Length: 247
Ligand code: ZN
Image (cartoon, rainbow, N blue to C red; front, top):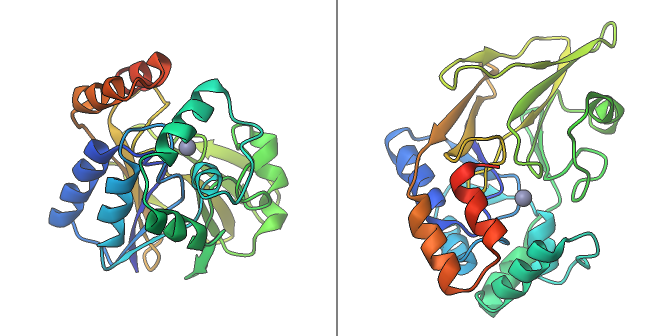
């Protein structure tokens, strides 16, 4: 099965359109979102509508999606996140809310797990440091787990024989990584709609479960157009500015 994994779209229709038009010319069997379709950006409804119309699309829930549909309380949300949550609530339809409520916590198939935060705390844990990744290794049985949530694309590898682990440097976006037997992996798909790794372009990852190959892809889009829509909705400047800087 050839997958495109997209994550953290965050109501950014311009970025989503750029990714989907790339996928039109580079089709896959299955498109999976690791959550946070909504929050932060100006067009949650348009993003949900666009994704639901795709025949081969599925998503797990993200913390912003769960807060928007009332599944969780946004206790750990900062001021900007809370503002965008309230703004997003006014921009979705009852049917969108129903759809967000229906999203599963995880998807598991072809020896691959898809979640938003981490294998052990699927909705909320942020995986940045190596020791946190290590602590998650016993929380899933599949050999590969795709996550989102931090908006930082990366590959973490864990050797089952001796417990050694490391991050694989993602240097060239075109580079193809082949996953090894005897290792488990957590791969962060980065963010489509609000990258935070210093690059403004939308991030996605391709995975072939048969050949066990992974490659990342960055796609430039019109950040100015999204920023304009956010200004019209009087969204926080910090959220608007970070789209151009990628931080
Ligand atoms: Zn997010």
